[in-house]
Amino acid sequence: MFAFMNIEWIFSTIFILLYSITIIGLSLVIIAENRNPLKTIPWVIVLLLAPGVGLVFYFFFGQDNRKQKIISRRTYKRIINRPKTKEPPTDSCHLPEEYSQLSALISRNNQSPLLYGSKIDIFTNGKDKFAALIDDLNNAKQYIHLQYYIFCDDAIGNTIKNILIKKAKEGVKVRVLYDDVGCWNVHNNFFKEMKNCGIEIYPFLKVVFPIFTSKVNYRNHRKIVVIDGYIGYIGGMNIADRYTVGSKLGTWRDTHFRIMGKGVYGLQASFLVDWYAMSKQVLSDKILYPKTEEYGDNIMQVVTSGPVGPWRNLLQGIIHIITNAKKYIYIQTPYFLPTEGLSQALHIAALSGVDVRLMLPLHSDTWTANMASRSFLEEMLRAGAKVYFYKPGFLHSKLVICDDFISCIGSANMDFRSFEHNFEVNAIIYQTSFAKEMRKIFLHDQENCLRIKLPVWIKRPRFMKLQESFMRLFSPLL
Image: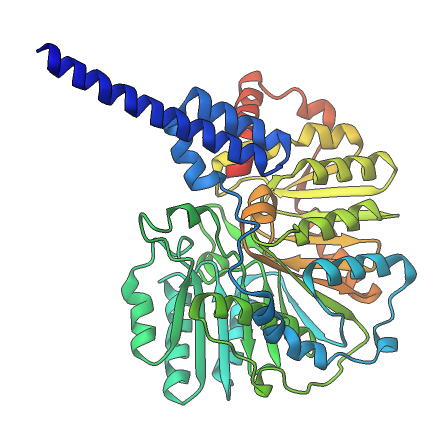
């Protein structure tokens, strides 16, 4: 009996010792990563006070993959080299001096060239967007590149699936990327049918337990379509019926662009990098970047960001836009969970007299994110920003407009997840007439909003404030 207890004590001691070494070692690794102390300290505390739960949460959500490479620098340059060879003369892409630093920032942190003379159609509802997309897909001649975070097995999803299958049978090359986590509720047979019909299709960062469990937190949130190199789509809409027929939240209000011209080169480069990452196929044929017309005098930069690489490209670009705004900055976002830098930039802009307006949905599809978002609003109101809740349905648009010259639209929300964890893509358009058009859309939406005033907002029930503050603690994970 004594011998048994002695062996049990030895094994228990060894287990506790190894476990302690693991937790302490992991804490040292986190500290050595030189993260923001506001992020480092909570992780270390969680690991020390609740090592079991903390270890699991860190494995899922805490690892910093920025130093990892999903694609080599040489391969990346080879893929994006084509659009750079098609750049217009330098004088065609001349920006006013006050915006040259922004374009230089994006060029350096994202290797994104200035793309001159695109034609841009704006969609603010799913019916118009999908009608145009379906027509363009039916008219594809050479290839279709389609990438969505969510590709639902519903009416609109099956309509597009059937068109893709039809075009593949006609000899059109069809390549599809979908996010594995975004499509978890979609049966594999939906995608298998496309594959069996000749479509090349891959899930992005497929979660196969236990090998890729840590990748569950890093998702591809991009929405891109490129057709024959001449037509492209970018914006906030996934492939789902809720964008056409609504949901229990009502109409889904979103923004999407249809692009013709050189702006398509940027979308193509983004797709091809992701395609290589999943398929290991380097695509660089001339047909991917065909010669195209110049449709106007706008200038575009397509900005990608993700949890790899040294810089937070989109976050840096948006903070630069905000801190250099002179007259106004208008923002639409379904979730508002700003990083400390973004929050401070908005406060400073508002306190400096810039007209800062933030539009959020009155009712959200995610209770936790909605509660956490609202915890940031009192600070915004105290700084002098105007806050609006969109009433008719769910506002899913991701839009930034600044000083009647800069418009930014794409897949990125104003939250930790988009800026820190997701693979995102946005288009920045430099043009006065286009920015004014986007401003009109914002002001039209504003007419359907409830404006929040500080004296009323601070009188919210104390229990609601407590809920919001509690959920704010989890902002980096929402």
